[in-house]
Length: 488
Image 1 (spheres, rainbow, N blue to C red):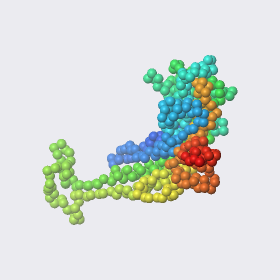
Image 2 (cartoon, rainbow, N blue to C red):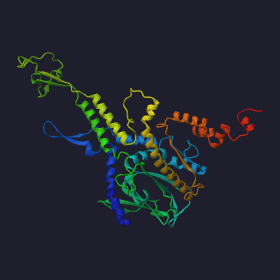
Image 3 (cartoon, one colour):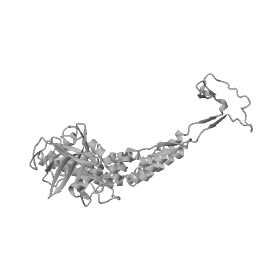
């Protein structure tokens, strides 16, 4: 997809003055995420005969690993979204955790959302975009219809063109993607514009011809334009919680390794040296030509190539003029395993530090033993940065849930509360010592800083009413005796 052609079209259509320079950075980050950035990983060497030989640097592909690890930490199978409104909870999450209904289940949300976090951390930005199938309108007004289907699209920064940004928040935006329809590729541009307090959504299909967009008819079921009648956006933007030090005005974020490209190069240089030492480290045996023979086809044979040959007559050529055996010379290159391992490990420490994971995140010292206290101490930087990124992920998830609730009420006609309380509970057991936290909470109960029922809600997953009953709080003596199984 030619993002420059998209920006040219948007500038001409809406009289904007958008620049496409920032997407060059995103393309570079994407190349590193894929594991091959040609200006760095591709090089040439001059061979023995003077000819240039094309080479490819060995790579650990650590950019993708960094993003995978952040996605696993920030959004995993234990992440929980709690929607206080029961109807809204069932509409989005399903009747229970094992049910196949609910908007999230229908859109493979948890798997796709985890993928989007990974992609947002390489590209700097991701977007959840709601698209409505089989929606009915009258003029530009949406008609309520329970048969309308909600589809969630998961887009990266290369598919997002901010049009209006206020206080760092994207207000107007164009989402651009390539689609394959009946064997032909089209560019789909979907613009969300906030006009007079209401979002207007426009859909357009194009064919790119010599860098110029030619508009084509829309497929059946897609409306050219409609107004939502609300200022609730049908999209939610996700960015790593890192200040953009390249262009603060763009509205897009930066890759989690945007300032660690030198460290990615350092890792691959060290790893390449390690692999090259092994590749070039095989035994070398140099033979005097007197030990070789030539077969009937002109091929040169060494003694070991002739299975039946045990003895070779050398005449007077066995000893050189200095009295040394000059027929066979063996050379065993040093593999430098320990030095290479230390070099790779040092570069990994620098990389994980620059990407917010701490200096001890990637360790290949399986034989060493550390205490739990030391282990958690090494993770303090990761804990702090994860807590910072949780803020961004939480805000995005809450915005997405509110948008879905709005669609459920205003488009599908379901009785849900758009303003219900939404809570996001993250699983931080990987980076937090849960046993230490539990012991701390028990001490706070003894010190009167925490109530027993609060402890039960936190650690046993009970609701407030059950937790208070189990803790015996708020009950009379008779009720307490009966509840605990006793009697008068």
